Image 1 (cartoon, rainbow, N blue to C red):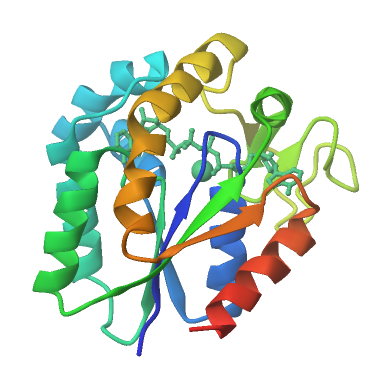
Image 2: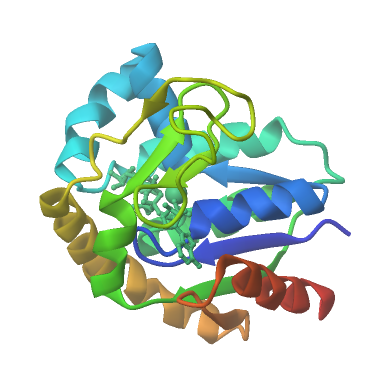
Length: 218
Ligand code: AP5
Ligand code: MG
């Protein structure tokens, strides 16, 4: 049966990094509401127009918008593929909406994997982050520069981009939103015995190995 998991953790915890690894190694699909919203902003859709300023301020977009995005994207997935929820749910209302969405689609949540991290280190991670504008490969000013300057290791592209919300001030708001609205949803899943904690400060490969061990325990 397809495994459906939530990756939970504050901004910069490594949700996107680990989701990309799972997509590459398993028949799983990454459902990142942040990526969906950024695509909507870029395309100038009505959702994008509503979300742009909220995201740039580091605040949360409405529960209705993000739950509708998740429902639409899940509907487009083959039943055989597991879903990785990356950055969703982020509020109690979204957690309840996800329950209803999964039930309607005959899916079950296998695990909620919490990436346990040190918030101070996350500001460094986030403010140094950039990606290839062509293929989306991730880089970091201090930890992971392209092997050849100004050339993407993966696709050879020469253009790179940074997220407008990746500045120190907005990161603090994003962290505060996480503490106030997202961390409090953990008990919902703890009561169901679904939460597994992983040390998100370990090397990326070690984090991936810890997540793999959890998936194997299903
Ligand atoms: P979203 O895109 O979800 O951003 P976020 O939660 O702030 O998280 P990030 O994407 O910044 O971090 P990440 O955990 O994916 O880390 P990454 O792997 O990139 O949301 C953006 C905005 O959209 C929100 O602020 C909100 O406005 C809106 N939004 C989205 N979803 C919403 C929802 N459900 N409800 C309402 N609003 C919503 O890693 C970060 C960096 O660290 C990278 O450079 C990476 O290379 C590096 N790194 C990763 N792992 C390691 C490691 N183990 N060691 C060293 N470096 C590492
Ligand atoms: Mg991300």
